Image (cartoon, rainbow, N blue to C red; front, top):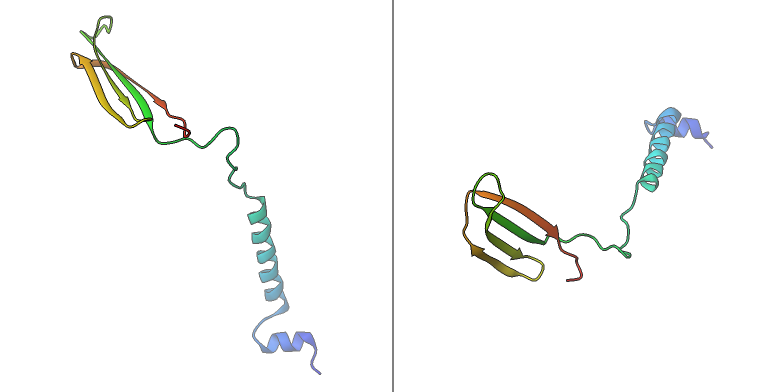
Length: 101
């Protein structure tokens, strides 16, 4: 009966090589368990990629006199609705929708 070291050496593996492979495998396993996992949906669901947007148009660069608005309700799928006049002077705001809508 051969000893373990002779059998290992005959297959091209050394004891140091086997030890290194085992340590790398253990390290990879430890890293996988230490990585953060995805949080399950609780009271705060993940965000949707839908927005309610408002564009407010002004008469000039001072942005003091409102002359028009455009609304897009991406939450319910309503197309853009505009009132008044569109100008080169505007502000834009968007609010992310809830996934429950």
